[in-house]
Length: 449
Image (cartoon, rainbow, N blue to C red; front, side):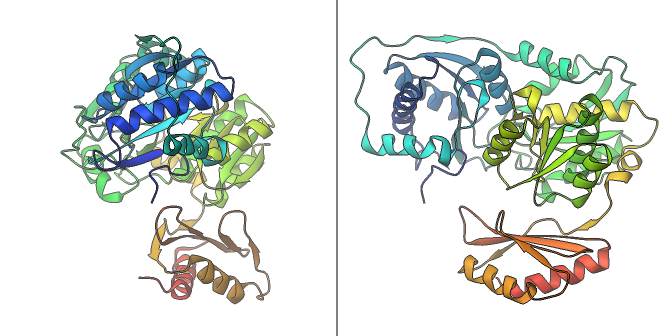
């Protein structure tokens, strides 16, 4: 399996990703950027994994060997690298394996203006250049310099969400020993908040739990702390802090679709009639909230390259994914977990309600969460499911991303994983009992292990 994935590069340190590989990838990126007539300086950020500075240095040497310059922004969250790419209008590379375990590292790449580089927008070509081996430049070697972007990043975020009149909130933040331990202190020093810090020490060995808040077991400590401190809200960030999950005052996970709907509501108040993008495993409530507030809801495939492309084409002001990624037009269409968190804090500070009550109007349906089944032939399984449901009255099916089966009272989607022999199932229904019934039917047809 190639370490060049759909949206980034990711693999095992010293086994799949080495300093030599990073040098070769820096050379390949420079070659690609020249062909794209991109600016001649590449920004490089790095997370807290022990291998990140080593790999970033090797990559920088590869880029500068081709005559391009490098600006190292040092320790950064991925959205801070996107900020730098947007603000300075330069291509960028972020050394991180996001929520992956400690033995992994990787590289996220973007063009100037934080535009994504994915499989369909350059990553395949860069992979080919690495495999072929690019000729070393014989001309001038580029210059590497350092530039701290943290204060500018914080300043920009605080121009996008008005927190000047914020009532005092008690906030528990679980950084998971990831990059939010670096960015959150700089942001929250400027806010009227009492912060209880959890696992802010930067440690790429993740001694407390994996920095992967989509897995419920990694939210247990945060949930306990929110209840113990009687906090207003809990925030959990992944390793590179581009995703944020919320826990309410009861210690319960906030459905990411409810946060999507809340931010959509706020963005439409600022931008009447605007378009909002949601991915197809988001709750139906997102589309309903957008339309109730006079916006246009646009349904997207799962994956940041699809959402960013749709945002560019449609002029949408905001996009939300059920995986905890939130994209903002005024943040160069890039995703920012911190910006999503600030929207939640702003909304909460403008009401006397508890977070769970404030979000009640956005939680309209029962959902299963994502269920993964190991299957040998995903295409055959999806075909069998379609054959079962398509002839039924009142059922519609579509293939925007995998297979979506929909009725008036429920829907489900099955999608094959890009990287593993898995079929991913998401179910939503008007009641908990109906959701369980449809989930059972779908899983019986999937018949996985």
